[in-house]
Length: 171
Image (cartoon, rainbow, N blue to C red):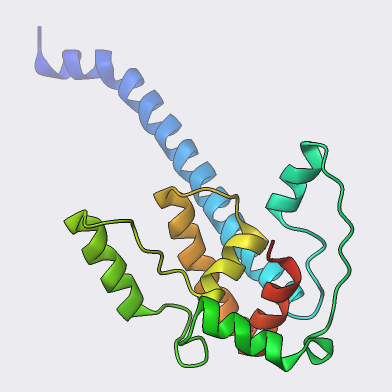
């Protein structure tokens, strides 16, 4: 049998697979584009509008817990509370852009050396991103999304808005 005849016989299967891969690629592109555009819009809205809830609040509600939260603007929150949160959670909050690279390096070194208990390196910005937009958990996928949302809120909101949202949604 000629090589051309053999190639023609297998051509429809190759073309069908290629078409399906292109369709899947287009679907993936639409999903990724939708996520990026949707997340940017949501961050933009939350710059001005209080988040109505968080994924953790939704989980608590599904589990049967009821809570009533009211929003308190930052100018009505004690400056002493703000200072205490910064002192206790993220002493470099005012000087970093969402990531405390020194704390991340220390935590990474400790994780790899397996000396003692793991250290956390989450900043207030990172915790706010996680609390407002993401599910509770400690997996690498959530951490990647947390980094993405941290960059978005640092750019769009600024430190005062991040602190206001953090104080209103943290449990």
